[in-house]
Length: 390
Image 1 (cartoon, rainbow, N blue to C red):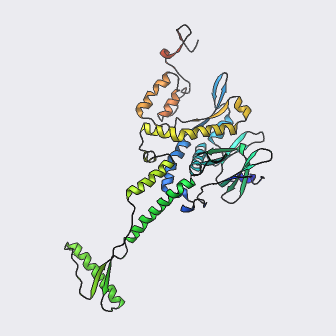
Image 2: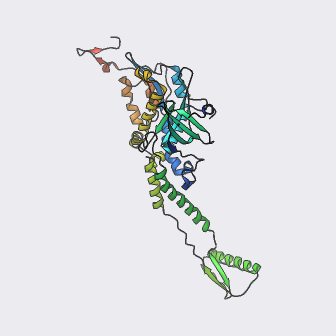
Image 3: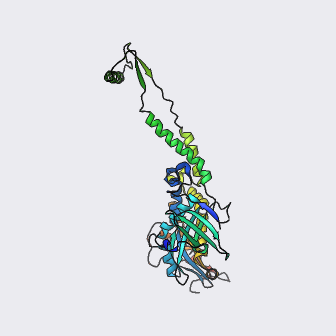
């Protein structure tokens, strides 16, 4: 946060959200430590890793065709957004913040000419929309150290989910998660207490005569040794004299059954849009594609659009500049499907190096040029084949 410290404090009115942070206290039911829950973290991890594997690229669409990464400074900005992290790490951090809060923020620092040269995530505990008298919008952030930071909205990459109640911010999962996390916390504590209570006193020897403390302890040990020894010899019988009554104590411990626990866990999975197979990596090709299309792809599109409209001006966007999120590195496919993609190389739809990336192979020289089999060449106006030289 060294860079952000230079931008502390500006100026006026108000829409607020509280963010879920490890050090916060918004979700009081579990001490605000939502990310400390193993269930929540396991739900978030596949999504954040998938978002980190997205490859952001600068594309320029002109009348002469499509150019990829035409500006070196944009390419470096996307792969190395700041001195503290790579593009993958930034995307993972934004994804985690988005899952926890349904809002994620990053600040675009610009040079003296207005060009973006750094992007920093903003790990705030509260965000407030400030509508200025000029008609512009600022966001006032309260950071974990208590300081405030007010920045123009046009310089903020803002990802949001469940965009419903507020005009600017996504709706938090706090209310929906609160009851479920209380059940999980209570269940976990119940299991721990049941284990602890398993070591409490199970038998009470009640003597009819007064004995010294040392004698009571000695007799208790003799009773325990006698009971254990009878189990050892298999008789199952223990005997005491008439001076004492042996009373068995049966604790009334409640331990939730697995069915109750599984239902609560499933409800949390549903809220985060995931399932056990995705979390444990046991999915099939179709199951991963379903997860990708329903969970990852919508946010990938939002991320690319937000980068585009915040990095480039309206004029630059009008001239065809944009950011795209390439997902080839996170597409799961069976070996048969990957081998069938070779037909896309033959038809020029993929370059050899793109296909080799899918196969987890390194690039080869000349592999970035599209090729096409002669029997799949472009058809001419009179029905004849037209070669690339024509």
